[in-house]
Amino acid sequence: MKAKITKAVFPVAGLGTRFLPVTKANPKEMLPIVDKPLIQYAVEEAVSAGITQLIFVTSSSKHAIENHFDSNFELEAKLAEAGKNEWLEVVRNVLPAGVSCVYVRQQNPLGLGHAVLCAKDIVGNEPFAVLLADDLIESNDKSCLRQMVEVYNELQSSVLAVQPVALSETEKYGIVGLDNPELELGKCAKVTSIVEKPKAKDAPSLFASIGRYILVPEIFYFLENVNRGVIGEIQLTDGIDKMLLTHDVSGYRFHGKRYDCGSKSGYLEATVEYGMKHKDIGEGFIKYLRGLNLD
Ligand code: G1P
Image (cartoon, rainbow, N blue to C red; front, side, top):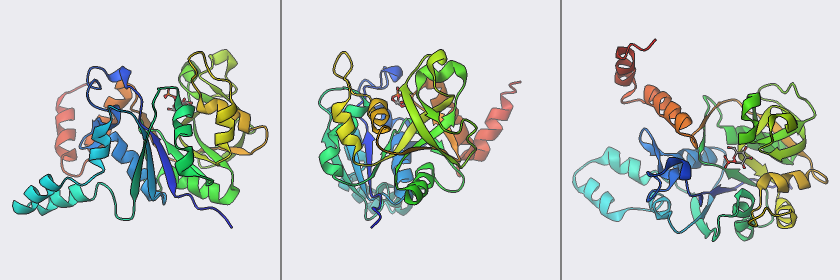
């Protein structure tokens, strides 16, 4: 019987140094894009793909994430009392019905692969998704993860979301080698290698793996057995690369626009574009931008 993907891992233990000082006391995943935190966009994407259990790999400074997905009785009571039913709905629907959260601590910041390994016992022997909340992906129709779940259902093997990047950008990403270097939108190719942040001259292609993964549970074995870095860190890409020897992995070029909200400029681009499309403030905001008369 085909396994259904119901669990998603959200590695949220990172320090968010690129956004200091705002991330000194606030998790970077709680930075808002207009009126919703980044982590909520990622959770909504997961839920749209059929995920019912959210596994947050967290650290001691990330209580705001737990609070965001918990009920807030005091706030709800006050909104109800004031008859602010619209806001009451917004607050109550942060986590849709039928979706549960589990929190597991990553005690040392030892890399993305290590964070995924922290979820091993909760994931168990099932395929699962991994979403990095600082990659915000907007799509008109089906969410990126939903597209990937469809690919998984067809191929029954791990799927990585990939997109083309500039030669000057390879050092920011896990770069995949593909058996079809001309990969078109909405199509898959077999991943033949994956290298974490290579120099342009060492990059196996110009396709980067971005923060959406569907992985078979065998990945845990490979993560446990990769060579660790100098401080003992475990890269997810190294685990995937080892897995390629015995398991098929597909690179899927998704439909949608990805914003790198792990960088200040990507974060601002997302803020402006989501602001322009926002149902309440979009029109006024566009007028404001036009008034700036930028050429
Ligand atoms: C992580 C991964 C990298 C991937 C990237 C996508 O890097 O290690 O393979 O390409 O996310 O955003 P980070 O951005 O955390 O340095």
